[in-house]
Amino acid sequence: MTSKSARVLAISLHNQPWFDEMYAPLLTALRSKAEFQRAENSTLTFLLGSGSSVCPPRRHGNHHGPVPSFVQPDSVKSFFSRAGLPWGVGSYHRTTFALNQSAVGVDNAQKLPQRYTQKAVFVNNVAPEDMWYNTEDDSVPPTSGKVAGETAVALAKVGEGKLGYVGDVNAEDGSNAVVLAMCGLL
Image (cartoon, rainbow, N blue to C red; front, side):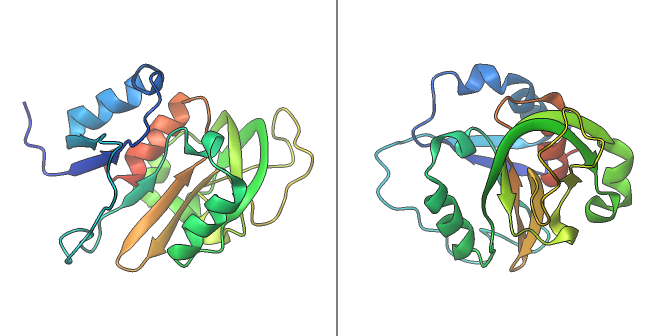
């Protein structure tokens, strides 16, 4: 077994009974590359994060899973605004996405799928440099039009860390690779 210096904490309050099965490939990959822990106590009344060790520099926060399908649109905007991001809920459909190589960096650009299809809840008002994947004019199936500032995969700098969003609602293989890359584990 290799030494695992990376740590991942999944906060899975009100976890759906099918989550572990649907996301089994991603969970297996995370467990193989990092110390993986999960908080599942749904009776939690308060979560306190304190000190710089909670989110040290160069660490990533990541928002992934079935969340986009189960929340009210207004609460998504409120969630992101607390982090200083103007993101809100965008469109919802399946289409092909193309990698934005300038947003992901050279190392990730060589490892991530250049294109992949996902059915997703998009976020809007995203800065171009934070969009990891974009729709294109030749995306399949055709979208109702490319909307500026809208994507299903984004990672933004927040304070000394980062906050990511993956709007995939079907746990596509490409999205699993994206989450691993956002966590620095690809």
